[in-house]
Length: 354
Ligand code: CP3
Image 1 (spheres, helix red, strand yellow):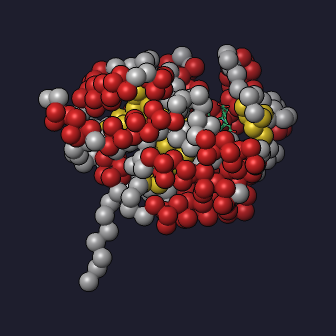
Image 2 (spheres, protein in one colour):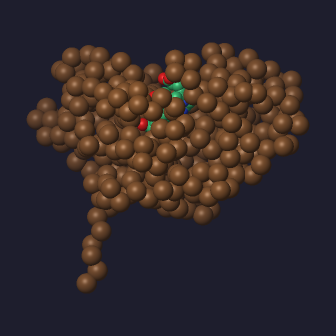
Image 3 (cartoon, helix red, strand yellow):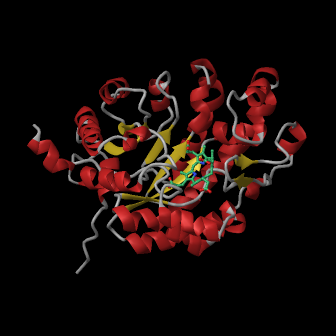
């Protein structure tokens, strides 16, 4: 007799099923707000080692799963992880963030980039995802993630985190042909990488175009959206049933345009009202979010009220409860625990406060 395999809860929501409560996970749920993570970081100070050593990356991915039982377990990695594989080395420096030296500034550098061969340059990703699937079974959904071309290009060209993106925008507005060439190469590499994650066990993949919200709507349509579409159409051609989520920070002005990317779910930040986002996006697209990460510095009553309000506004079909951006490093761990505990009993709270 065939063994009935249960579809994990988050995947059911991602496929549009109506549920009694939304599934819940947190962007950056593995990280510095957790004491267990800080202890490991002190022992292994290199971010690249923590994310590229299979045992360490598996352990870190599972720390929040063991502590809070979220419905989603995200691979511990970074959006920059595939870059060395195409010829762009990087490092992550404590309190500075990502550093790319030398930054990508010329056509010659772009022409010298290699196509991505994940099995050659990053086989650790396959191992990590395979182990995560085995470890969590049907108790949670394993999420992969990638950076979108515009955001990866922003890091590679600026060379570090930026406030105003003057270098990449100068290239966009003065030498667009060079930038388009780079964005095309990144899109093809990221499509290959997304498929590799899916083939290695990722059941849902989130695409982070975190800094596309820095573009005017017109420039979003020129430099970000077409390359999101290029990644998504290539992935959907091979894996049509794997739900894809798109996150942009500061997306209130471009929500409708995000839906044109071809993703299944749009992840929104807290500057948009969830009910208005639903109206603007329409019934055919799911939503994720959108509680202010700073809500976790509020009282327990405050956190509970925000969870209930967000769920009421989103409705019970096609919503994944999350923060509107990553959990902040100084967040009290106890409040994260309370957030998950409350969210996982939201069906009772919704019935009680109806
Ligand atoms: O969600 C998870 O738990 C998975 C972990 C994850 C990391 N980076 C680990 C990480 C994810 C999903 C990312 C994605 C990522 N990386 C994004 C998109 C998400 C977003 O925040 O908009 C971006 C823009 C990056 C680039 C990046 N990596 C930055 C800006 C930084 C420094 C941020 C900081 O707060 O210092 C990193 C480093 C990084 N990546 C850390 C973690 C946990 C912090 C460094 C550390 O723990 O040593």
